[in-house]
Length: 128
Image (tube, one colour):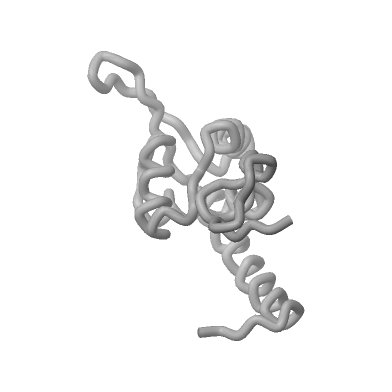
């Protein structure tokens, strides 16, 4: 399947998420969320998506359908905590990383660094 944005047809649209396939985004979503919370501090879901887009010039997007179930699972695993506050008369759930989440972020970053190095070698990709 070709995931070059200029060669996308309608049948491929369901796997397209920003510049990358849902498959690739799904594999990196946990580490991206942990890193955003580690770097930025307390955030709500829309804010995470907006910041990820900003940091990647729109190439990486967090879909709501993947983000919120992951956040819920991360709360259950003790990686993040939540606080709900009123914003414009509506409840807004904020997420914060825990100590356990900080350790998981560190481990996931090391794992990803090794994975990226391995993929560069395996796929004959040169570093820039």
